[in-house]
Structure formats: C-alpha cells, structure tokens
Length: 309
Image (cartoon, rainbow, N blue to C red; front, side, top):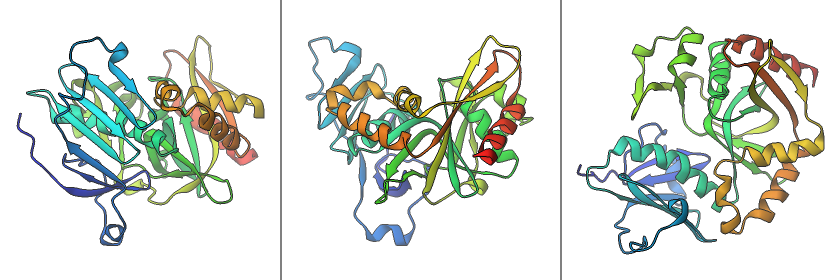
C-alpha cells in the first residue's frame, strides 16, 4: 500500500510526538504543547541498506547503546535511535494498522528505555489521585481488571505500557499514555460489553480497541502500588503482600521489552531504577482461578488493600 505522510503532532507518555504515520489512538497536542521542541519523531525511512541482508540476525533484533533495530517479517524493519527517533521501513503491501501496533508497543517500549524511563507491562488506574498498576503476563487479566475499575467510575492512566519516571524528590510518577484499551472478546463478555460497538485490532478478530476518553487521566500521578495478576489452578481468588526485597524482582520481571536492556547498556540503570521504585510503593500478588470470572472479587481485594495501606 502507499503510505501517506501525516505530520500531525501528538502527545503520550509525557512526550510530544511528530509522526509521518497517523496515530489516531493518541491525543493530538494542543497549542500549549507545541511551544516546546518535539521529543519524538516517527518517520518512514528506507532501511534496506542498514539492515544486514546476507547474514542471519538472531531473533531479528540488533541492539546497541544508541540504536535498537528489529525486523517483523512481511511487515517492516523498525529502528529506534537515541531516545528520540523511530524509523519505519515497511515491506511492500504492509498494513499500516499493524505497523501502528508495533510503533505504540515495542518501538515505544524501546524508546522509553533509551530515555531511561521505566516501561512496565500492564495497566494503571487512578484511586484518590494516585496511580496503581496491574502487571502480569499476557492473558492474565490486567486490562480486564482496569476496565472493571473504569466501569465503576475510576480513571485510567495507561493500558499495555506504563511509563514510570522519578521526579526531583525521587517519587515514582506514571505519565498518561492514550485513552484506549485492548480487550479480548472473553473480557468484554465478562464485563457485559457488546463487542459489536468496538473495532477489532488487525489480525486479532477477537481482540478489540475500546476507547475510554471520558475517563482518561491527563496528568502524571505518583505510583503508589503495584498488583501482580497470576492465573493458577486454585479454587478462589486471593491476595498477599510482597515484602520490600521481593518488589525489585517483581518490577524487573514485568519490565516491558526487558530483552533490550543488556545490549543497550542499561542493566545497571535498570537495577538502580527498580530499587528506588521498590522503596516507594506497596506491592501485592493477586491470584485467580484459570477459567472462572472473578474480576469483581479482585477489584474488591484491590480496593481493600488500598484502603488498609
């Protein structure tokens, strides 16, 4: 397909983004946002001469301290450089919707790491003007639990990638991403939502883009707690606290695209960052049965833990 240059200014993760590629999920930057410099540029670039053509690349990934480059077969080569540029070299006929999924996912995760912003894999909601994160492996219910909170009137900060920085007082802060969730058909069913109202994501007919613009928090908020979701062979949901030493590996195992860290020279930074955050937050593990809808019980457990804090 032909790719139309867009050049619209957006904002997400506390950054302004100028993109050749339309990113309709992202809020457009307002006039007040346009006075500062562009933090991120997303550009179509021919990378044929840059990507090695005649030797196999392990995992289709090249990492250096200044560049993370990866190839998605039959789609595009992506290059993320110096924490401020995303270059996209699409294959002929590549679908722009699918390219956009990688820009907002793996590319943004790589770019945040290059800027020494910690990306966690999960969703974050707002309770009493503080951010609480739900982390866990794919399919364990992070977005579903966040959506249950949204249905009860709470606001969402982010879904999928949680961008955490430290302010001048070393308080961890979560920046708003964009007002959209990605929910599986099963999640929509458990929440009583009609899938016919939402747009399927590319090649994922049973996963849908769910807008949440009316309940989207637009300012960075302090990260007060993390809840790890685990699906396990149990009869009923439960909750337990993590002690301070357990919080560091918790943050490390749920760092988004952590495979980029070592070759990017970020291992020591990653340990230091997660140790600082671990000292500032509470953390809990939530477990749930494999095949039973327990989202509302989990929500009650989260609210009880926050109230007792």
